[in-house]
Length: 284
Ligand code: PMP
Image (tube, rainbow, N blue to C red):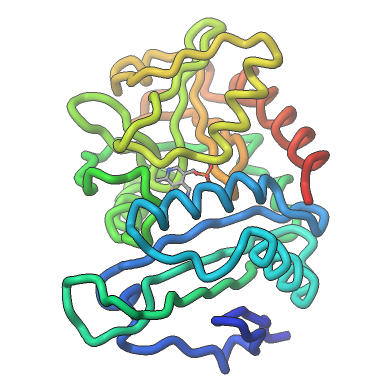
């Protein structure tokens, strides 16, 4: 079955969907995106993703082509038309098509594209039992990582470097401190304390991060939001990452240094359970 995708108001078979070669998303990476997970046919944390989308658009002075209610309806329609039980909805807004010019065009119409990815058993990934291996790479991205733009080439390169090194992902390092993973937020656990970088322009404000920190505090876990060094991470009792598609995923090795006994730690494992349980309950 070919997917049905959404492009600027139309639901189309994926091979009939078209975007202009003059689209600024294509020419300038002048676009922002969101990825929302689907479990049991329902959307996880949709409101959080819609809010961050609006923030990304505002920071780039880009118009939002739809209201939050319309966006929710489009998500639901795609989930339903594609029979998604577990998977992802990808959404991208670009500034639209215009003759090539660095200055923002005055009257371009934003492009809105959404598509689904079916991932049966998304929440039962065997990786959650074995944990991820990460390598460290320098963070050479631009200075507005809080805006969720489609400029993802360096994270792609980082992922490839990790694969070549026999690892699963890369953590990015700036001035000795861990910023985040290629497509996720990074955490360490020392004693009973969960440490993750504070919010700022240096990292993406993860929707999963916000939820997980809230659940951790509600469960009386200690949370410290501050930058931590790569050395501190390698000496930590455990580590994990969060993202909309991976939820909470344990990290068991950093640059070939095993954390603890080299298996997923109790804090990451517990947080994953809590996150999945709470998010499923609140899903729309
Ligand atoms: N940081 C980066 C760089 C990311 O790309 C992502 C996922 N898109 C995240 C963090 C995690 O954000 P979220 O929990 O909203 O998926």
